[in-house]
Length: 331
Image: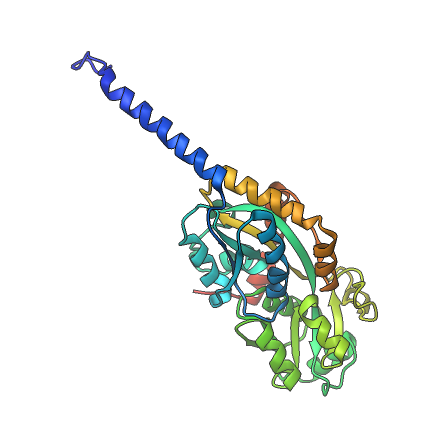
């Protein structure tokens, strides 16, 4: 109580309490009706790649669980930053989801001179959906059959071999830089606007190499349109058992992969986040969906938000060194 104004003015307090009660009632009603309209699933890469394929595999099952359409929207550019800005610019009501990737949750904040967002501050984790190793591919005319031959050729012709990635400062870009640093070779980076365009040009012979997710590259390897030189995993992939890992070809411990998860803008009502998380985790247990994602080369997850946050933290620590050594930066 202010000494000059001894009155407590109860008439002022009551309306504020009433307003708070009304706000709680509105929030409760909103949570009970979530989702109230179709949801947008923002994907940071172009159609045709493994990330896009995973999103389009998940969306119809998630639509059924939520009782509303989940529409995939590809918002490409700036290594994934366009997609991030799209979600951060939408209302924090749970109706706009980010299909989180290594690029949006790890690479962009680590490569911006002045990071415009902090993943674990500006987003709320929903769940980790799946992970998949990267695959090193070569055009059929390149005279190499595996990693040792590639390294020998690249050392003989430093900078002459080109590799395509899904874009500057994307996970596939980092994977190739990690490979170059580990093997001591110099390759020339050619960034594309998505894994699909990079794959098309590699098959056409416009670039010699490409680092892609196993889910993106698998169909082209099986059809013979591309040659697989090495899987960037510690063990061989069940769907491509004949492709040796980079690790077993002389570089123990070499591992690089992509992953996808669901995130929403921070400030989204807890009840909406819980509904998304519960339904997503329930969907991830469906045998049909698991089989579809695993058939694409993915390992299916579907864990808690806390597990997803720890995963992002671990990935950030791992890739910061690669980013610094390769001097990868976006404005």
